[in-house]
Amino acid sequence: MRTGAVPGRSTSFLKSLGIQWRVIRALLMREVITRFGRHNVGVLWLVGEPMLFTLGVAALWSAAGMSHGSGLPIIAFAITGYSSVLMWRNSVSRVNSSIQQNFNLLYHRNVQVIDVFLTRIILELAGATGSFIVLALFFTAGGWIRPPEDLLTVVQAWLMLAWFGTALSLTIGAATAYSEIVERLWHPTSYLLFPLSGAAFMVEWLPPGGRELVLLLPMVHGVEMLREGYFGSSVRTHYDVGYMAMCCLGLTLVGLFLVRDAGRRAEVH
Amino acid sequence: MIAIENVSKSYGTRFGPRMVLDRVNLTLGRGRNIGILGRNGAGKSTLIRLLSGAERPTSGRIRREMSVSWPLAFTGAFQVNLTGLDNLKFICRVYGVDWKPLVPFVEEFTELGLYLREPVMHYSAGMMMRLAFALSMAIEFDCFLIDEGLAVGDARFGDRCHVELFQKRKDRAFILVSHDPNTVKAYCERACVLHEGRLHQFNTVDAAYEFYQAAAVPAPTVVFD
Image (tube, rainbow over all chains, first blue to last red; front, side, top):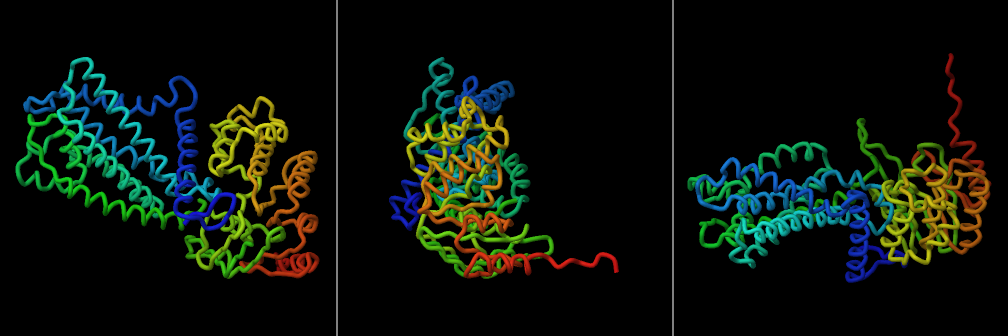
């Protein structure tokens, strides 16, 4: 249980939640100004940066003909694929080593390690979500892609990806507090996971043995679901929300436990 | 009341764990104060980190029944890309205090002028210190942690800090750590000495001073034999 700011006694759960929200809001504003400044377009870069990445990837994939003759519209394929990678990859990268970088904030008793993590996760997820929405609207308005067939499934898939991104960030972010080896390993791992994550292929295109293997990765289920919602009956998808939810739940529990323990072990470096 | 109960803290080093604080006990009532004397490396700052909650004890526990400040005039938590005013807003948001009524006090106390709205990275050490002290006074606490914070700045600034802290807030508790017995003598009603991980308590500041001079000063080593 958290201690209240000025009264300094143990506080109720609801009050703690209030303090936590207040602290995260304060951290969000601090982080936004720190990262994007007040110059030029400022906070719009939060959405602009992932947008540029996604646009670049969409252009490259169009040139390379990555839809493998499946007849899928390549731009929509690239936007759904690359945006979902951003959901789990960027937040983990931002959270890594954030305890060391923000140790001095812990002198303020209300600021805890989990707040620092959640702030960065929220910002990354917001950026990726904004970029996905803006790009989808832009290309739809221009008539280059069709609007999603089933918006509700798209939203559900997106929320699942956000949950996965959050849980993975908590786990890996906290683990970097134990050993910097985790961070060193994360870079090659995220690089290798990208082509396996379902962003650049449909599970349907793989041989049955390959499908089973690749479906062990939770994020593949999220991307498949996203494409089911986007392209509807024109694609055959393979996913299991229950499996993905179980993985996310497990990761969340491990993540929360590690974050709490990392907070107790946090020390000046 | 704050109670430090059997608190130990050890840090991992390349040569195994090193005990910095060894079963330390201390109680401080509301409105009371204490000075903690210790040489460089005696564990004073470690104790401050534990008291402020930035780090947790390896064993033992700290009970806080009053609100405890962050270390007075601590500049480490400044985000240097942000302006002085942004840093004030941040602190206020974290502690749930409205920042607007505090601006006149901070402007007046820091004498930063236009620089209050400039990034902190453009500040001199003295400006940074004035801002840090003003922010410490902006949030009201029952107990202030003072880590030799008063030793810095010019005499005028020292006087103004003195008025804010020891006159306007003389009803508050504080814990002052220092290597300088004169500081402790000047401000504290009670003193103890951190020496080799143990906290030695005394009834009077003078007794603590004597112990500090005698025991805590390393015996002269014979360099040439």
